Length: 114
Length: 113
Image (cartoon, rainbow over all chains, first blue to last red; front, side, top):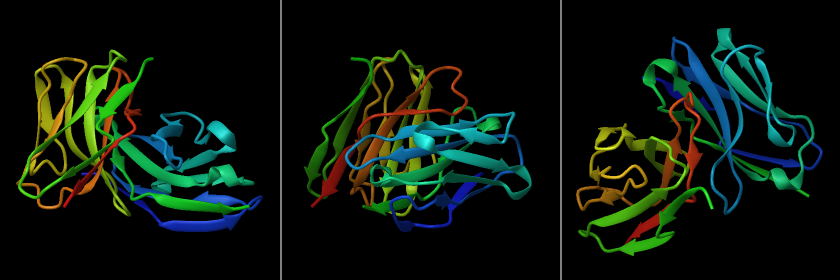
């Protein structure tokens, strides 16, 4: 079975700082990769996704993620964060052989100080 | 409005009682899912259903039950057999060719007293 690990449980940074959240998965087959975000009091929503092609994918609100197959990683980045980026971020993996089932990482809570 | 409606948003129950969480969708999606969210553990899959009248256990199905009698509805019952039921429960849906992309409801927070 696949598993997903996110390296940091909590991240605190100031506005305009750069953000990078690590995500590694364990599955040897073909995968689809996702980052979801949960803003305070809101439902989970898709930030970005990777299915195939260019391993550098861009999502909403200036976020991007890079798929490195050899490292089984899909790290999320944003060059300059804003206070409104305060949220919990979840990496998720779909093994294509598993249909539509998603396996999630433990989440990273990001607090951006104004 | 199109979307996924979970109810109730907050629920308290005494130990030993069963409770049913509702999930209704009008997105016309075939697949529906129940996840449980606990701090530091992310989301864990409880049950999922790819089609009406069919459902499968996820990774943590013990102590839970579901039904899928209608395409729009996928209620989750938290039974008294669930040892640690206090959690945030999320319902999600997916269209037929979603490749894993899910759409989430706003969640139901269950507290067992």
